[in-house]
Length: 278
Image 1 (cartoon, one colour):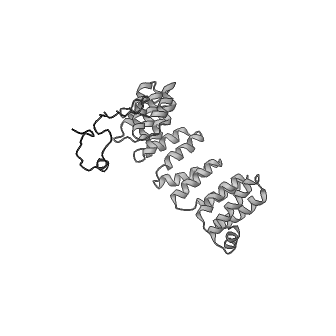
Image 2 (cartoon, one colour):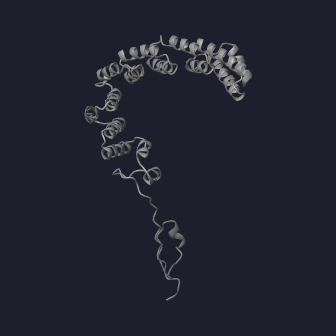
Image 3 (cartoon, helix red, strand yellow):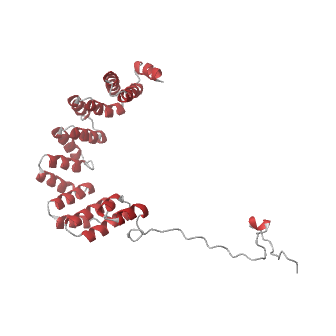
């Protein structure tokens, strides 16, 4: 298989180049990060990316970072940032942030925000907060919260963290059809406001609506957390109690016809007669 892949790669097939690079990198990992295999894998991955293979374009920055070539990885990402594909740009921004290139990530996210890409304002606000620009992050979220539910939730969480729980609660309760994300954020706001019982109720509502139980489990203490993990929630939101299926009620048996007639096994009508004579 490797020989066939190598032959196809040498013939210029982009998919074969990318797949061969993946196999070489996997072998390199198994052989305690063999540098020669990594180098050859990088070479084929670069060629696959140059040939237009999308998967290779996604993998190449990650490989370069693993090899300690972070600046090369950043250069590749900035080349990819020239595209108009918004999904690619979101991935580029995330990887740039991971590499610590916050200014470049900021620029990409601003383009996406201006283009109306959902989730971009939230990620841009995160970059701004990391840079210590809290006011700019809040302004951005307020500008986009009316049309982006993720931005509204992030704004509420940000307000709660800075002690403005009343405004944060108002924002979350103002959502006409609250999602699990909204309910979870509201529970977080109530918790920060010192209203633990209300927060618990809202968090249970979020779980009943489809949110993961893990957040509720973390908020519980003692045996109830284990009980929730094992038995879940009742329809009214209470932690389900341990239960056991009832034992089947034994059928009454009589001396007359203790064994079902053959025909009754197949659901056919069959008159019952005493096995004893008259």
